[in-house]
Length: 416
Image 1: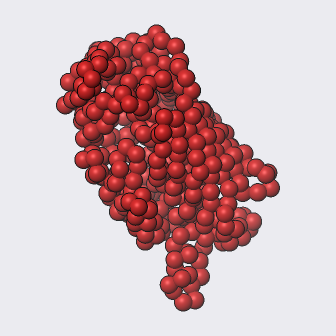
Image 2: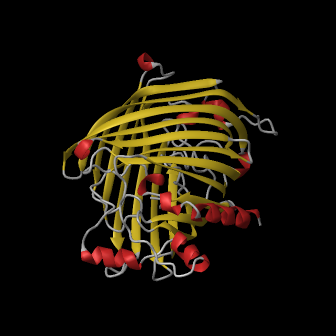
Image 3: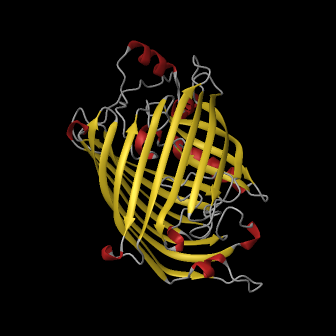
């Protein structure tokens, strides 16, 4: 019952603010040449037939209401919006959030820049404050991507590897501060190269020993009261998607190489690599339905990362890997992840859609060990169009996994 109540409140809150929702509200790094405004006659006719949640509600409660046309009115003057919401997820249970967004253009030919913050407090007494920014320079020659987060985060761990048992849950609590900044330059076409710096600090780390006095993977790996990872990254990206928020075609490939070193303040010397690849097709080709594929490989190349910095379920940038499992359900030195999703219209006006998804993830345990069993996740979902301008959806998914794992997953913007 509380799931339905939370979803209902989220929809009600969102309906009052959809006029302020833009493509960058969820996907904060739109590294493509996609433009919100399409001046072709065919595009205008198509978008004018589309409706979102605000159109539907207004048509019910206002007389002689006509849906607004899709005009991109974002200019030099910043547009500020705030969205209060009540939601639910496996890792937070019920959560209250206040999200603020500032969007603008550096020049008339620039992509939309955004600064987004979301302060939240959850039923599990978790506090989160992320500030994520994507700032495009004049004519999109450079893009500056920032990510700063402060978490007070009670959360459980389940051991290392994808063979870990859900009954081996071990309660933890910690504070997290993250600072990351990347600068990328357009090399030509849809290709970008750049570099950045990343700092992750965990402190006040506490844990509860298992009741049967077993030695947990966390203790074996090496418990600490705090940890620091500080280092630099090299970044490459190719992005030909038609819409970074809700792609219907195109290809995306990002490579992120990180090197952390004691001379930069890290506890250990270690290196990691993230390879993020996505492909989208219309299926059937003449329809608006889309089949999408996602590969996300998060690899430790050398050294020994702090336990909480190891690859883990739903700890990717947008916390969307592993639908069907709670965040941190699986953790290990190496992570291999694959997912496919079929997205289809339910109503002709695009206001309501659906998805079915299937994913699989495999982790190794401690450094030097092999990948273990592939753990599947699957389920259906509903999409409610919040903004027909940016094609931003409210995602309501129900995922299932092994060992009785299941739950509701809510996001704004497509999962990938």
